Length: 95
Image (cartoon, rainbow, N blue to C red; front, side, top):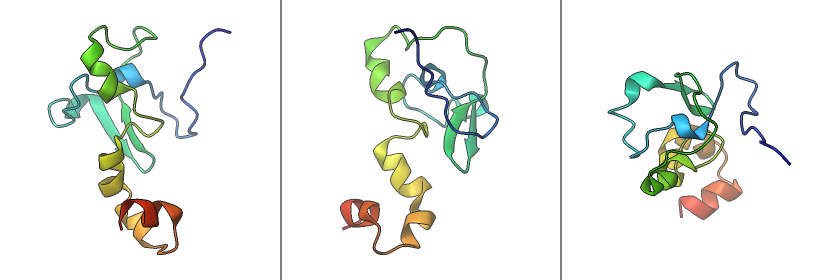
């Protein structure tokens, strides 16, 4: 079928999972990341269209469209989710 891009947000940035920190340490790689209202995207150039060769990196790179783990999403989008107390996400994650 070919390669399907996960870069679907219309934010003018190229999101790619293998550009995220291979060890999950966003502080160390802060100069290579950009925080947006949608999440986190790498600000480096795509070199290859694959995950890091180190298998332990997969858990930190295969995390979704916003570039954030579940726990990071809870804090990153907390203000948005808190505005809707009936939100399914809020009831599932904050209670």
